[in-house]
Image (cartoon, rainbow, N blue to C red; front, side, top):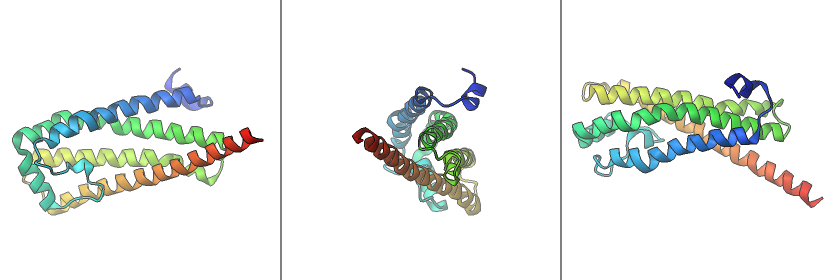
Length: 186
């Protein structure tokens, strides 16, 4: 199955599941390996990726100073490479998952179908966040409060779209399961 077939034929649950599994393998590699490794240099401070409410110049300076050269290098060369793969996989797999689910609920041709773009928008802002983090890591301490606020905005928008997506997904999953239960009961 080529990428063109993926979008031109009806989605198979198995295809969606494969994408979700691959995405989560990368996610768990970050959560269990690269993020704890980077945070081991940070004396308990959260890395910028893990701050859904954003950060300011003081937060960034504190983190960058605590990380030191070795920690900033670990962030740049261990965490960021995986986090440059993850947004693509997150956006695609969750787009496919919600598309599959809305198809099963006969809602893909309704206004609700616009929600399938939430993970793609979140992924785009994740890339902008990552570019900002790379810039901050490369230019420390020569960045402005304005630059930090722009990159923080990207983090907040990424988190917001991700949260709205997951709430939507949970709601549609519950509707799907409820409909299956009703059909099975009758």
